[in-house]
Amino acid sequence: MSVRAMALPEPVLSSVTLDPAGVWRRESPRPAALRNASYEARFDWLTLFYDVYRVDRHVVMQGPPLLNLFEPLRASTLLRGAFRPVFPRAHHVSRNKRGEIWLRSNAEKLHIDGPLGTFTLTVQPNLSDTFAGRRVLLTLSRNNAPRWIKDWIRFYAAEHGADAVLLYDNASDVYSAQELQEQLRTAFPAMPIIVVSWPFPYGPQGGAAGAVDGVEAPWDSDFCQTGTLQHARFRFLLKARSVLNVDIDELVLSDQGRSIFAATETSRAGFIKFPGRWISAATTAPRDAATCRHADFVLSDRTVSAACPPKWCIVPSLRHARRHSWSVHNVFNAPHNRTVSSEFTFRHMKPISDSWKEDRAPHPVQEAARFVRDEALAAAFARTGLARSGGD
Image (tube, rainbow, N blue to C red; front, side, top):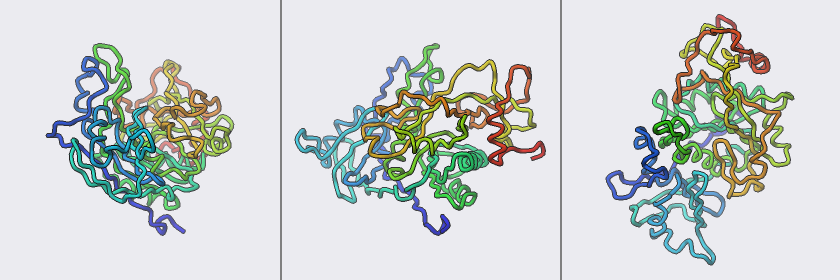
């Protein structure tokens, strides 16, 4: 049966945004003295819930960390008394950039009336059957070129056996989530592919990108990507065979020729965390930003010593408890989270990017002695059919 015959669901989000003219908004966890000029515009002041959906006996109300919004929410007609110490109906999760309320309820609609406002929400269905038994590629993307996304899928399908894609589109403005989904489903008709429209603020950066007067900022205000991972985990992927969390510009390789999915599925922890290394934007191919592809770049820069924060692959199962948090570079509180693989490494492709952090445009090789060819990556491009001739 083809995927089109399977009638894939088109997910709807039950989101809640506070009235921008109202008295309530989320308080920032970052002291004012550490906020740079872009902080105000980037922080998510108003999203109460990204989505409200069912997980077995529970309704999950999921959003950014509630912070100061928790107490007025708890005072609503829906939740008043639900957090009682004996036989509670509700549980509040507030850690690792998560903000969730798990409410034991069979309701199909929730009515919230309290200090934050009045909202009636449809409880969205759990869609984990869509990806049951699948090896799923999971990512968040904004404005990435469809040719890059297609090459990324082709690489993981051929090299690692990926057979499904769940992509969150973070308010792209060069195409719609629906348009991207149609392109990907046409290119890969045998795969279940869902593109979720996720139009929420990404959040201010930490580190050097969020620095004030040369002082690096904490990573305390970027809630969006962790939100996609937790949402994917509980609404879509509870029955997945395994899940790989990597960006469009990240390609995983094994030094033993193994699939990251297969290795994770047979590992004792059901979890593998792996490091990354940079691949330069320098190229011997005559490419520019409008035409370049992953396979045009196979050079690493000897002068770049900075490592890339790790990524991970996981088997969603009961061994990974609800208290564990899927986050961008970690699965917090999970066994073996501190263990980093020596077999698997991802190549972080500098020019395959919408350049939201820095100028990563392709450029000709200069100072040839500065670069070394990544033979394993070049071989993988040839093996997966992504390598291009000079005229392609």
